[in-house]
Length: 393
Ligand SMILES: Cc1cc2nc3c(=O)[nH]c(=O)nc-3n(C[C@H](O)[C@H](O)[C@H](O)COP(=O)(O)O)c2cc1C
Image 1 (cartoon, helix red, strand yellow):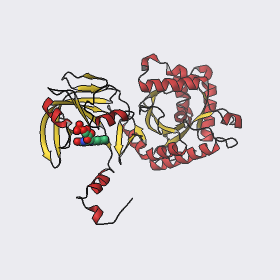
Image 2 (image 1 turned 45 degrees about the horizontal axis):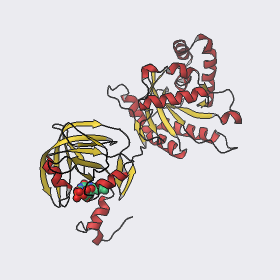
Image 3 (image 1 turned 90 degrees about the vertical axis):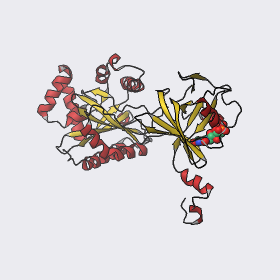
Image 4 (image 1 turned 60 degrees about the vertical axis):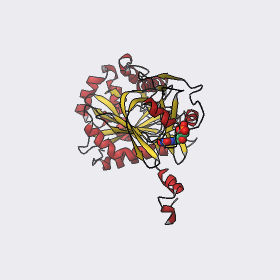
């Protein structure tokens, strides 16, 4: 909605002030404290923010009319509980004027004695550092003494008067050691392609790169059906066929031989070589549904969630059983396609990135996978142009 009315743009019109500021989303927290006399106190705030790293300071802004704030002030300390997306009823309770907001609520006490609510996303325990007056609110600055990620799940968001949750357009792998800086620079240029593919096919799209002797998932787009934003991004896979085949297929015969010798049992090398030729001719690689593929996906999801440790999983073993790139894509086989990978070529003509689409709905009967393949190839060549690469035939 837009307006040109001068009157409604007046900052002194409270409804308008709220409406315009409501365009800005906030997280939602419960600021909770144990006052010296009386029951626990807590109030919902959307005004929580981090302030300073050194010293560690945070802030929130209680309304002068709040009855909870004087109790928190009397405690001299408070714990900020970041609410999860599914904690709306808890939020409503702490935004109410209920006489004892903690009745029936599960919590434990921080070392400071302030309440930590069960199932909060994270908590930040503080002592009051300073309080300043600011119009009809106070600005309360807290010095952080202790903080912890609790569930680490998706936080609740407040926007235009309603509650919601975060949905990422795309996520990029963290790179604390700077080992994938160049790949991150490239993927940043093609993120919009990935986001479009994921949105168009209600699917997920990842970008992988070959880094040293591993395949690293450096970015992902498309929403998870699960509760957290944990994704495959950051995951490292062994540099072996078929998951690395898109990188191998355009390498040139000498390099292909070297790679096969390092990655593949001698008895399987001729078969892999044939599949690399198929990939190069088609311009893409497809993965087919199978028990091994299901086990591979489940294992990757467990690795992403921390449900299983990397050293306890033999990804090589699982990858070697995957079924990829059949000689012919007959209609019956097309129904089995669960993954499509296309190469994005870099400025030196090598495969710089691979874009992979998966989790897509089955194409309607009689349509087949071709529209998906055409669209992936179109994205790949656009991505190649965006990173200044050229397409190898
Ligand atoms: C999403 C949301 C954000 C809020 N943010 C604030 C805030 O930043 N400061 C504030 O004083 N009240 C805020 N409130 C309102 C308080 O939660 C509520 O008025 C207060 O808890 C009322 O009870 P009290 O008298 O116990 O303080 C917010 C409420 C909601 C639902």
